[in-house]
Amino acid sequence: MQGPLIDTLARQGVTRRTFLKYCATLASMMALPPSAGRAMAEAMAAARRPSVIWLPFQECTGCTESITRSHSPTLEGMIFDMVSLDYQETLMAAAGHQAEEARQNAMKDNAGKYLLIVDGSIPLGVDGAYSCIGGRSNVDLLKEAAAGAAAVIAVGSCASYGGIPKANPNPTGAVSVSDIVKDKPIVNIPGCPPIPVVMTGVLAHYLTFGSLPELDDKRRPKAFFSETIHDRCYRRPFYDQGKFAKTFDDEGARQGWCLFELGCKGPVTHNACATVKWNGGTSWPVESGHGCLGCSEPDFWDAGGFYKALSVPADPLKIAAVAAVAGAGAGVAVSFANRAKKGAARKAHEPITLADLEK
Amino acid sequence: MNELQFLTWVRGPGLDIAVGIFLLGVLWRLVEIYTLGRRKDLAAPRHAAGASGLHTVFRRSLSPPGMLKRAPVSYIGGYVFHIGLAIIVFLGTPHILLVTNLTGLSWPGLPSQFVDLAAVVTMATMVVMLVDRINKPAKRFLSTFEDWFTWAVTFLPVLTGWLAVQHLVLPYTQMLALHILSAEILLVVLPFTKLFHVFTLFGSRWYNGSANARKGVPV
Image (tube, rainbow over all chains, first blue to last red):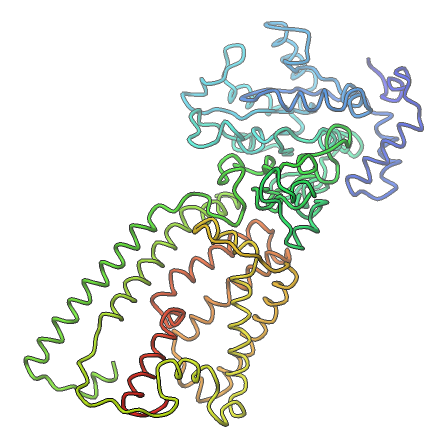
């Protein structure tokens, strides 16, 4: 499948009209001006397939499952086919030495030009021995592949922030891509798993403009991560009215009221679930009746429990009872001291001076 | 430490420490104050109409004749911001949820827009009172560091809470964490400053009222 993308698409029965519509949708979703849709279509139609190397590290393959399955066989899926995915362990036919060779060849042939996609965190404990591919540690593979990459795209919360492997007590010493790679542009697409269209959007942007989209301070594409789930949630009016589901099966839950009290992390979670939704726009976690877990935020796993509201203690109070007893004890002790002092003063017939009253 | 970790810390260990110091300080001071004792008054008690501890508790809540006109900001402002604080603290849904989680007690809250309004009115009133304290020479002369400090630690939780809800200045996560932190600072400071009047206000009024009532003087 070489040659311009539009030819490949035409062979697969995708009309020009459908393709333009897709580009316009992507452009508007990424908050680009209307003219960008046309530019995107032109650039993408003419684009040669860029080489993409996808390295899986400490991951569950959920990110790959999300991207390949949920949108297949939509246009996003096809666009994804249109990049030259030269190494992806889950999807590639090659195995063993052949696979490693494919990776080496892609790195050599496209040095400085290929996109490196990473999912999974990188273990640093025991010299990286917790996760090895072909006898080499993840950190070693990442450094090698990143050296010749045009840019690195960290897909999923593990690659972006460390994710579940980094959860307390982080037995493998897991870190994120940006903890290792310092000298390349990095895009973080967090989520457990991330939304497929966010990834295709970033790829489309790269194909069109030859650059990465505008990123926020956590290197996330602003177009998808600038607002919180809570701000765009269709249940938000119930939050403002003070109408909350108290359990998952009460009247409030049936009425579709706000899930804040059931531990929804929507107010502190930046992602596009509330607008883009999942499974081709079918639904998303809050719509299905469960609060947001905050899976696209750093260290969401250790953020005080999925079912605890944000305004309640993350942990049970440990020292409160001891402190109360200590306080009462101190009060009693001081009171005895005061009484002794008073008694002694009375015994000694000490007068009360003006200075005493000023105290 | 990223902002979610910061938020989790203030919701976890931070809260634990703050509540611990608060309880320690409150119990210490209450026990100390109430065990101070007074020597027995051997004189026969007198009686006068309107003189008792209970009378004083209520009477001191009203302005003495003529004072409302002389210091309207102090009296009206004082009432407004105290009621505002009570509405925010006791009728804001997230705050009730915190109390419910810690004690099991629960009561209905007010819509967030109403609590929001209360926060704006409270902050405006507190600013007016601060300006008044700065502008009036007598008030300024009587003010110590503690007065400015307690104003700030009371004002900050309201400000940060309102900014968090309104999504202003900082992202919600950071602002929420700062809000909880500022409330924890308030908890830590409360037992050891004049803010302890939360607990001693009515007790001291009662004490003064009944001591003077014994002498036949309604105060």
